[in-house]
Length: 341
Image (tube, rainbow, N blue to C red; front, side):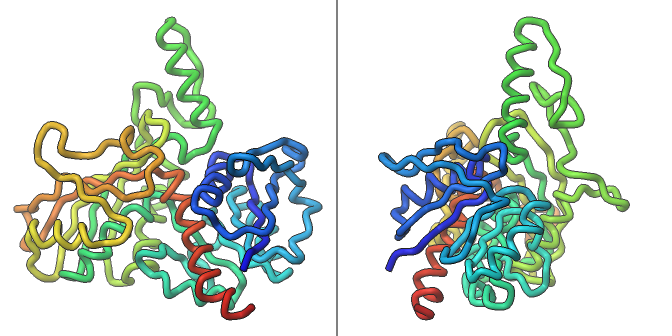
């Protein structure tokens, strides 16, 4: 069987990565529509090696007859157009934050809670989690199955691509300017990002945490286990692509480094690179274009009874967004839409 697929927000960094991943993985498409805002209408985008897609206007696009829509246009746009697409019988896989914590919308990472895809029938929408949450829960799932996680303390080092193309352009422009003793004032960020780090991602909340930090906590509980306590500090760093996380995990039962390493090596979507040498770990530069979640620096935390510390790295545009959405679509057509056909 083949399926008609729409990619909404197709001209953005994640939307273009969605098109790329669909083509690379040979998703069974009968037709692909690239859809974006009116200002992008008519622009040409590549799909695979040969096909060129002309961008269609979201405001006038008819989702009738389309099986799946991959959305990444921003939360405010998804709020309006995702329910409209679902009402036409098109299953929406939404990469924005709009529906993640909606109780009757499943929040899915296929390696962790793929069975929840079945709940798409309630609203016709499946939510793709936050990029930093995805890579963390993929690594935590086999450890949780082994020894039951009670608490997670995480510091993220998130690349500028997580804030979109304009943010990447700002890092590039500021970096160039500094080399010739010029100044490019920040527009996408609250402070200069070039040769700097910014301990703020998204808006501050009344309790002092940012919304990004809140997302990591509530999404982890919704995906993995409602009893897990999570505290996050999310930092934007001058890296173009690739998120990194320093994660400290406390367990209900004893777990050794060897047990953790063995469980992670067996886990789907995870690659362990942990040689404890000068090159025995993965950095963001090395994960770009890769599908895996890389786990390094697995070590015992001696300050708590049952604790481990980990270093987790992933391409945020792939597994953190586009790849996870396409994997949801693959499972959707393999199990659910196929049965309904």
